[in-house]
Image 1: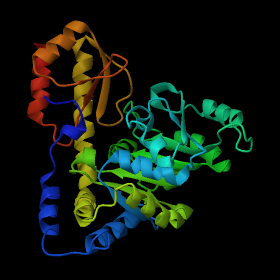
Image 2 (image 1 turned 90 degrees about the vertical axis):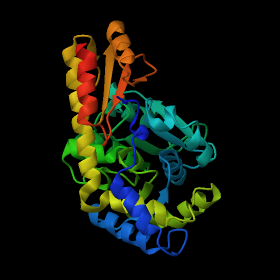
Image 3 (image 1 turned 120 degrees about the vertical axis):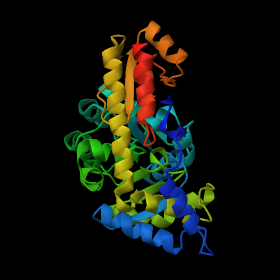
Length: 340
């Protein structure tokens, strides 16, 4: 019963098969191969717009590279206090931007509060030499509490930021889960909601390591600059076809959505079982594949003894993460562990 993280899950067989196929013969390196070309076309089709892209193998690399394109060394990135770029990337955004500052904002359930954003935008002017000017806004969707930003919530924070000339970055490590929960299209939940860049992650949803930095609109003009940063930082994979093959197989026949749907469904079951236990309080809405709960000590100890793996969040709560591979057998065993 491993609910520690979706990064602990196995690779989907379809993606392994795609890698075997991609391994046949020779292909041009550094993204000039036919598989990467097909992937770019597939992504443009799915997002209903021309896109440029850069492939990496980790979400941290994607986020840090993307933000380095939007924020200069003397600028500032606005994000939530719980944001992955702030809490879990060991200063990578600051490192890749050459010293850009992160300003964490508050808001319930790891969502940036629109009122506080307006206040911060007024308090940190872009034309006063003594302050660090905001240059980018970063939003995670799903966010770090497993919650979904609705379209209205996204626009409420992206619109004022864009009005002042800030670039907007979306961390989409669990973007597929957000799509399933929202019922929106990829376009509606990305560039139509104000994103200049989306870091689309497949690693948590069935891939070995496949991430894509997607550039929308005028941001596409900075592709060469992004590629230069990718190369200089050591994140330009020479055999890019193997990253592209994972993501292309993930997208084809809507496999990515099917896997996210299974993970979300399993999370709902986990949440329902925890609620029924009488010893757990669910802390946030379960909008994707993560469940955060405050466990009473006897229940927490009971679950650990039964072999249930969950992550102790810094605030003392417990995080349970379902994945595409969470099985009915695991859920049944979890039910027995709770009812023991």
